[in-house]
Amino acid sequence: MINFCCEIFKSYNNQEMDRELYPNIKIIKVPPDKFNEGRNLYRYLLVCGFIKDKPPFVSMRHCPFCGTNLFEFYTSDNYINGNYDDF
Ligand SMILES: [Zn+2]
Image (cartoon, rainbow, N blue to C red):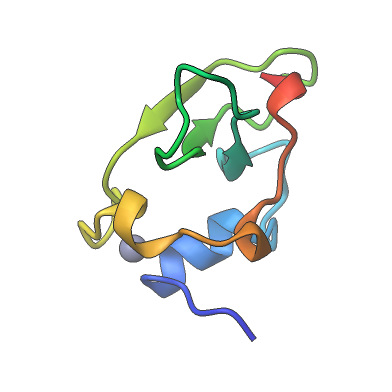
């Protein structure tokens, strides 16, 4: 059981809505390297759901719905729902 900052974020993240009609929220993990060692490697993307290949996205720092700091809240691999290589 994992917690979300708010129900709206959860619904976009869980793909409960039609992913081709609505933006999706993807949580990905950047591969570690010597430049980001020791930093938060998760990234929080608002993604155009209707574009399949290399979709445009906005990288978010705070939840657009409730204002939660995403870098402080989502810090577990359990939340990953996308692949770094897809973006
Ligand atoms: Zn939220």
